[in-house]
Picture: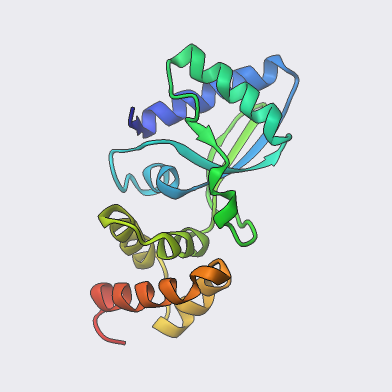
Length: 174
């Protein structure tokens, strides 16, 4: 079931209420497609919300997210921390949602771009990466320097080649 920006915001509101009922405060950093849907309206929807769970513990957040899934008829993994294995550090950018018990921020644009370049799986990743690259200023070397530190070491070659191709596509030859 695809999640639109409106669906995600509704789920965050329900998650805020669920956390409040449990006397918990949560902070998330959203990555992947959900960040692009919420930040830029880059596409109509995403399949889930990939996030880094800053606080409270992942198990407490999963329990609250599961209750929201049940009440809003969402997939059980609508909110998950599966992308944490692809994060090299965690940065924050724009606040996407903030209420009494829940703060949700997007990862920084360089980190989002690094993750898309490291994944580089399909046309959606390429389109997302192009949009993110267009948000960044500087030469190819400057932008790669800002992005490279967020690429997992095992993906650096793939991401580097993907970056070169993307730079040429967006800006012409460097």
